[in-house]
Length: 226
Ligand code: URA
Image (cartoon, rainbow, N blue to C red; front, side, top):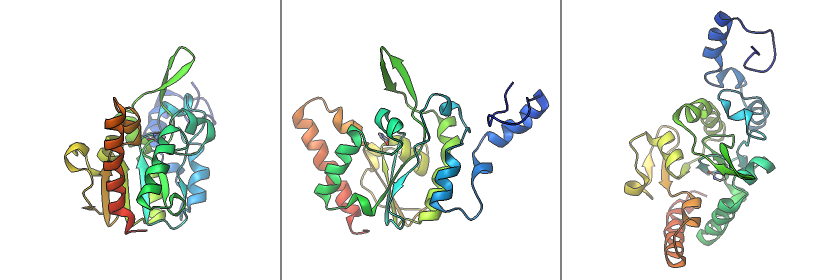
């Protein structure tokens, strides 16, 4: 059997158990005195869960070096996986429009995801988004913690339930507490709102418009942090 990091000697089962403990989380990959760039480089080699096998590449966060606002989505989509950048596909375009409407310059913020590989299943020739499970979210968590600790944003905005539950707890319900500025030990404030994809999936134009306005209102509440 191959070494889980893809290099080194073949594994015996004892060795494998020891290594499995180590690769359960990407902590061994996180450099001492990390900078954003050293994290980005190290994350390219992350094999802490199996998603590296099917994703094209690690999609690390990107944006300002000293952002006041950090956005956290769920996981990269098809286009993000191919381009290696977060929120550049349809959901990203919607996020861009909402940020513009809210008067927030995306280039002054930092955008990342709870999970940094694209999880998908084939449907014909298409790769369809598949929700990451708790083990995958946990396996990726040290990268998110490292981004937060290097960047020290004033507010973290969780886009959707996956990010919200990762940062605010499994019982957190975006439907009940969206738009609230919640004090946290991770950053002075965390806020959760809907995922931009949910607006794209609205059943009709009227609902889509109403959902977009609510989303813009949530974003306006963090504009003061820029
Ligand atoms: N959805 C996300 O949660 N993140 C992305 O980067 C793209 C789509």
